Image (tube, rainbow, N blue to C red; front, side, top):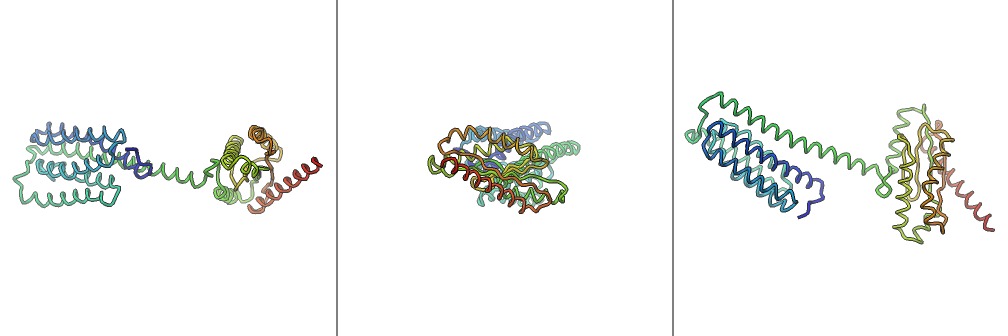
Length: 346
């Protein structure tokens, strides 16, 4: 069975693997503690059996097999079998069993993926409430510690172990949500085809630039479009057009300095937002773009693919005015280029 690509399903799979690894070691530690405390043989055999169950489950899920059946099988073991048997054969709430009962309840909630899965923490909760009320009526059933010092050490060790497990699980979950937040944010500001920033992010960044600098710093907008790009789609297909756009996006990324902002403005229109740049610097950037794009131009030589440029400097203008000026400049240049080509062909 192949892993589910759903992010939350992937998180639960990671958590399940971690729980199984931690479960193996925790069950072994509990067995050793019970040997040290000279607990009844069942208190040793039961956690050892639990360790073997966790090991078997881990071997199965590490190969991405039977993920759901293993999750349900392990949940049934810890909630329906281990929790009541361990509680009845231990000093109960007088021991560290209460810590592990809460841990089992917590693990059931973490592993729940569907509504039906919450049956396991509900079962755990019902068992805990039942045993807390059962103990006072049947005190003879629970073996107590012969030494209060031993009890203190036992509770301290087990509380530490349970705390580490909960901390590790929460750390894993928090790190996952941080990485997911970053991934989703990157998707929201990135053009999916070219891999550079999208139009919405550009406006957000420029508005932030205006707010921070209050007109004290200028930037240059270099607007570009791909002349004759439509002919690529018409003559070679849209997949070829997509490859041209991807290539140009990659070129802008390579051309940018650290604080520059490459943007796909829409269709075959692109922008570079260039702070702390003069017009001489723009010429070198244009030359580099043309040089890097030459390979693509040569590939589609028959349709005379090229880059058109429009330039505008902020110089106290509003954002809309700067973009409009760059756009006007771009289309003036395109008109001049078209006029030049017509004159050359006459």
